[in-house]
Length: 301
Image (cartoon, rainbow, N blue to C red):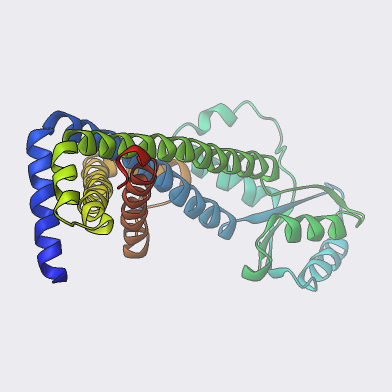
């Protein structure tokens, strides 16, 4: 009985699509566009999150020392820093080593340093933070403790850049959520009105079905199926399009990510995330159909 109901519903949906092709294509295109934008925002958030984690894991705190600091004082500072719970290791970098590293990084452009009559770079410590303390709050707490020691002139780890990036990340996440909510409401409206148009186009058929004893549930069922198909098809088409786009541009993006951020991969949605997007499409179509059918009181469906 249920199988026959499914077959009947699918045939009804197919006939509705044929007789109202333009309306159905418009609805499908709008839902697909909604999910394309949603998937792009989701990919952006996922990759920014991965970059943030990747960048924080590579954080090295640089502790700059006074020029006139004696070797004994340097060793005492090093032992003090090593004894902090947040520290994985401490490496002393002399001013000569720092200058050599700078020249190597310039790769043939080190001529710009020839005019220097002295080495302006200070001695420093390169401090690696343990994995469990790789967050802004823990690093700030650590810096506050060691920053009180005499002989230290400055401490940096790119905190201003990281704070700006964190604010940007939160802004994009809130913007994506707000924009996605607006798009989903628009899609609900479109699906709802598409179902209403289907009902209007079958008004005479529905009256006949009611006269011969068809139940309200039986009449409604094909429209629910149509809403679900719209939602599923739109989300699946969108994911396929976004996947193709990501394949076409991933090589250039990966090259840029590696150059600017040190990352070698551009992440796509994992199976769990793909399934979640498809289920959202299903629920979107089902909800749109429910809103539409329950608002058509004049037909008593």
